[in-house]
Image (cartoon, rainbow, N blue to C red):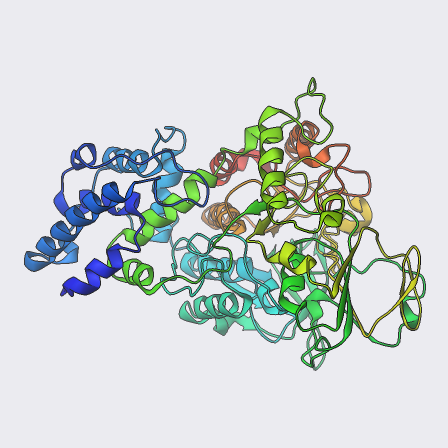
Length: 625
């Protein structure tokens, strides 16, 4: 491998220096080198430089430059040293500046995947010879993942996708400013890194391109049917098959399948609130996930209803173009300071990711570990804590930190009361703050109203004290996250799932259901992540479990399975008990995580490690066959 010395030197200036230092173990074969190089501070989420001084960085760069140059002058990248698992653990400890708990090491070893190259090997799955057939519903992130893994397993499957393209939420949410809020070098399949993200938190078109690339690279298009929407599915106890009704652009289809995997997720059915007079409005009106192709913003009087994640991205992106912009906000969001939220990835970093062996794996680890489970303990309510705007000492310290960060951006004092939340931090989805939101609110043409919308007219919205004339109304009001699998009717032999449970579903691990045999869900009830990781990590846990279950069925020639009711109930009781102690059910919090009774039904209260351990392998003792 030929490396241009100037290119290498320039690229190292863009490096994460804890990662570059640890990488020297691969290049020298000497684990003790980590004791001789400068030591990083304890890693925190989003900080990738270990708090190294300029002098420390200079020492590491010079050493790394010489070792990398020397190695490739005489060797090939295949000759790089592959440390033992114990040595990999030492490297982990160095990179994050702390001892990685032994409990986490197996999960992190799987995630970095240094000494293993086969995704099947990771889960001890073997190619199955089976006549089982699987229907995957949805070709978003989790549906593509399910297709890739079932293909590896050798299971027959089809994917039905209601849209004309893959991507799910990244196909539908094309609104201005739409982007991911998990660092992209972690928000990607663990087995399919992308070294060329243009931004640290990429925008919707690039995310859609990534998932489409994966879809075609792994040949999943051969099994996928677009513009095909599943309407209903009923399980037949006699045949032990699902009878599925779907609709494509030509006709309705009736067919049978052994197993269903729902990959429709939680954020797919737009939620538009019930508003008096909504049908009378004569202007443009749409949900943020249904953004029109024509320009309805420029020089228009626009309203954005909502101030959650979508509005937080939309408002700064359109504010300058509007003639007037009014935002209706029921409660303000807490914001996590992130100065690189809109920042481009420089060419040096792209070069390192693409060309320096193992750099991308260790960089991914550094992004992942500091944000894995460390926050979770601070999200439990201290019953003796008296402050109503926080839940414990650590949470209160974060409230002060976030408040100070917001106050530093506010010059218009009339905004203070409107934008500083009065509920505990992390009670709702945390939003990434690089200053764009508050800058937009300071524009003369932007007006923030601290109220919801209850009444409309032909001309616009009737606020608490006036009728606001509008050309365009955008509902950034989220999705019907508590109505799982809607609008499909799923009957496992006990009646329509949503009629049985309404907005209080019961499940085991958010994956299987006692009322629905031969049915799996990805991104099902209680599997949204609000404290750590990424939804892709959770989806990989879920498909590992599902493939392990299907392998068990195939190997034992079984056609029907169902989680035991007592196993499901025990899991559900634990799920609810833990949530009762956590910030998401705090008395001052109301969010899409909750159902109509205030109970959390969408979001996981578990450590990533707990969920990873539970989903590593299918346990047949939990099921009836």
